Length: 280
Image (cartoon, rainbow, N blue to C red):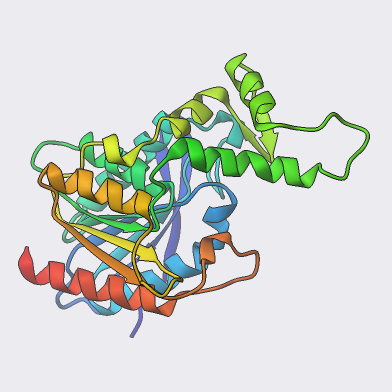
């Protein structure tokens, strides 16, 4: 019988963080837990169905899942304009600490999109001896390029308006550099958060000292990951990282307005965790 997901609030110094815990099915042999580090802004909402389905698949394997809304996002306390990269790192640490009191503690972090570099940094700051694995779904490898695409959402939304000056990415960046927050698609972005995102460069980020599963969607005939991802993977491997790169077929669910799922990604991720379970 499947366990019923448990919604609750985690306490933090800056307010409550909404979370949902999917307990492992049954009570005989639970094994570990996965903490989900969500995607950024609207991508987070578009990925909720996938994370719920993945949590259900993990539960059948005796693995629990904790899905958390970070500071200023979802149902957690705070406005988005108050969100900072540093506060998100603290939220991840709080989630890992909560899982430390569950059977199996925190076995892995599942990062989605911008949640991948966030998870990497959180793992680098974790206590010595703690070595959760990293599951990376469609990682953002270059924060500046990613943030540029995000800014273009506002440009596209205001393209037909004649009552306001035309937006440019350079103009919005000037506002941020001057210490002024900007609003994009209804989300207020503080300059400190924008700066932290633009600093993301996975190829120059030290990898975690634990097994890594990197999942990349491919649509071409070659079935290969894009060059930016391959470059980051090569850089990490040069530092001794253990990376299992897998490609999957399916919709770009994080980018679609309508609900979409990628069953192949869920199946591959579940299988990788089953393999991890046998090796640790």
